[in-house]
Amino acid sequence: MGKILVVAETQKGAIREASYELVSVARELAEAGGHEVNGLVIGSGVTDLASEFASKGAGKTLVVDDPAAENYNVDLWTKAITAAAEAAGADLILISNTPTGWDVAPRVAAELDAAFVSDAFKVKGLDADGAHFVRRVFNGKLDAEVSTKGRTVATIQPGAAPAYEGTSEGGTEALSIDTSTRAKFVEVKIAESTGVDLTKADVIVSGGRGVGDADKFPEVIQPLADALGGAMGASRPVVDAGWLDHPYQVGSSGQVVTPKLYIAAGISGAIQHLVGMKGSNFIIAINKDPDAPIFEVADVGVVADLFDILPALTEAVKEAKG
Ligand SMILES: Cc1cc2nc3c(=O)[nH]c(=O)nc-3n(C[C@H](O)[C@H](O)[C@H](O)COP(=O)(O)OP(=O)(O)OC[C@H]3O[C@@H](n4cnc5c(N)ncnc54)[C@H](O)[C@@H]3O)c2cc1C
Image (cartoon, rainbow, N blue to C red; front, top):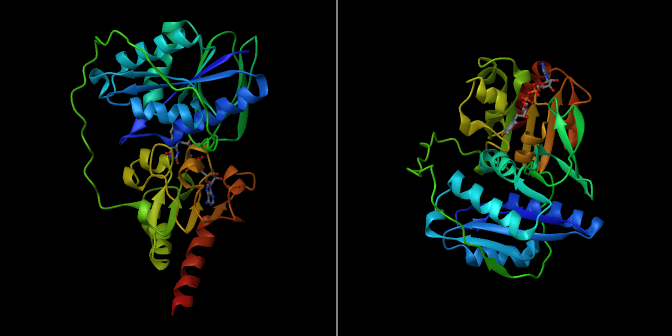
């Protein structure tokens, strides 16, 4: 029987949804292999949150509750997770594949001299040899199976599992660590609002790399969004290329949206994009590639060139509206 440590992240005074997704991954492994699940919550004034985590699936939860942990600090988090992994005797340490996870997880693996797997999509098993993962590679076109030996630290893609909805027993246990750090927290700067708030839109028409260049967005994406009374969105390569600003980005490192209608044009459907839009009520995907993963979540899939479909659709919507 192995031991799994689930590291929680908090945001705006609550445990993040992604942390409960980790709990689902851990609970599924525990059920299959008889493993024990423990949680870890780090922060200042977080003991109540740790109790909640313990009772909502994480089981016995260690808590580093210290004013020094009020703001994220990579040195402190590395110490806390390392100490918790040792205290819990964890064989597998699960951390979300978020900016915090990217920062801290490899350091924890190095401290523990453990194997490290990043951005896993599925954990297939945990046994006496190690842990077994699936990672999506080449924009979701291939699944790579990765196995580790011995103690393992892994980051798991947000959205890879539903948030855990069951309950558990275990309570909390305070963990004290040396909170001296080399890194120093300075300040949080909130980006200025550009007026784009995709989370409030009922209809979103998103364009991906398949749109080709920045000039094509006002030509084919924005007109359909306008005709439908909706907003324009984008995948990450569009934002990375500077074609649109970051508030337009849908996905794990952009906005999570749940409109009534989501139209994805020239978007392949990588897991990081799907995480941000798969909760939409109705999804239409337009892509030239019949094997594009976006079709797996689409209610209607159109295998076609977006430059043939979008202008025709825009005209049809305008005509229908009179
Ligand atoms: C840590 C991390 C975080 C990330 N966060 C995000 C995120 O928040 N949001 C996000 O979107 N991605 C994110 N990504 C990137 C993600 O992995 C993919 O690379 C990205 O989503 C791909 O964008 P795309 O579908 O626009 O481009 P591609 O994967 O290149 O797909 C373009 C698609 O357009 C189709 N196409 C081309 N021309 C046409 C045409 N004329 N008509 C119709 N179809 C056409 C192609 O068949 C293809 O399927 C993240 C990646 C990492 C590692």
